[in-house]
Length: 63
Image (tube, rainbow, N blue to C red; front, side, top):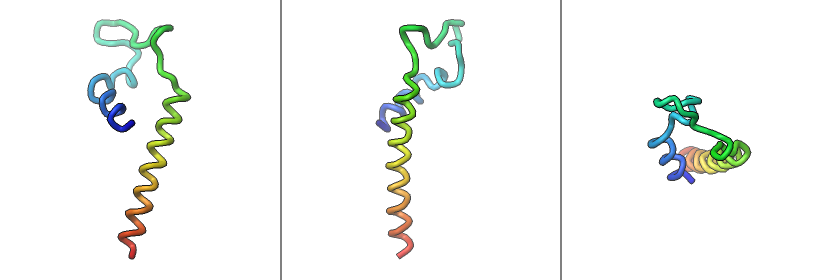
C-alpha cells in the first residue's frame, strides 16, 4: 500500500491538487474518478500501522 501511494505521489500528485491538467483536460471524468471511501479506508489502515510503530518505538525507548 505504501508503494502504491508513493508511486501515485511521485508520478501524478497533481491529480489530488488540481481539477485540470496542463493541457486543460479534466483529470477525472465519469469513467475515471477517485474512490473516496476506499481512499479513506486505505489512509486509516496506513495511520493504524504508523500509530502502532510509534507506540512500539516509544515503549521501547522509554524502558
